[in-house]
Amino acid sequence: MRNYYIAGNWKMHKTVAESVALAKALVAELGSCGERVMIAPAFTALSAVSEAIKGSRIVLGAQNMGPETQGAHTGEVSPWMLKDLGVRAVILGHSERRHSYGESDALVNKKVLLALAEGLEPILCVGETLEEREAGRLEAVVGTQVREGLKGVRAEDLAAVTIAYEPVWAIGTGKTATPDDADAVHAYIRGVIAGLYGEAAAKAMCIQYGGSVKPENAAELMAKPNIDGALVGGASLKAENFGPIANFRS
Ligand code: PGA
Image (cartoon, rainbow, N blue to C red; front, side):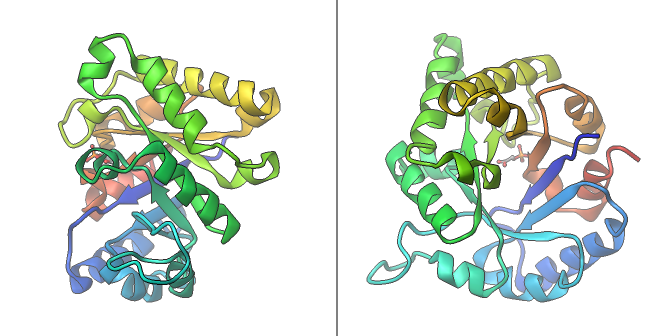
């Protein structure tokens, strides 16, 4: 049976106390969940959430990471600092980082390589804007983000990498790609991976879908052959929404 990877991206939400309360609710709710579950609180809440989920099956993630390990990088957070708090996964190249903060494929790639070198598991986010999709550039854009994002990643490190396909027009808008549309893009991404690393690696690659995933559509999305999990934003902020998404099989 396939193993799914369900991740919650809390974005810039919640105080430390609110984050701990949500983390504790999820520990209670997901105790018997068979999927791999990750939550990515704000940097300020990582330490407290790390304590709150200790001993549970929930993996701690970060929403971003600086491209260096230490030094004069005002405002950045090092992979060493993340590991120090028990972080194991890191979301990289989220469309909000790319489009609101100008992160390039080259910068995202530098972070992916650094995360792997430091033993963190990157989730490489890719996805097209509505304008790009309507101009028929979906495959060119997503293909480039995958190829450039993985540049220099060794085949033996690929198992630690997850790709999240998040069409920008579906993020936080309530518009979900149809399961068939999403699956087609996932299949395309798998083809790109096959071209880079071979069929076996492509088959083994975990590709999450993200963009308005909610309890009502999770099972239908996960039923598609190329969708291996979800990266959830808005619906990850409440246990009564994220719980049923992670428990979509029960
Ligand atoms: P959303 O966000 O679920 O609120 O659409 C997804 C994401 O940005 O990761």
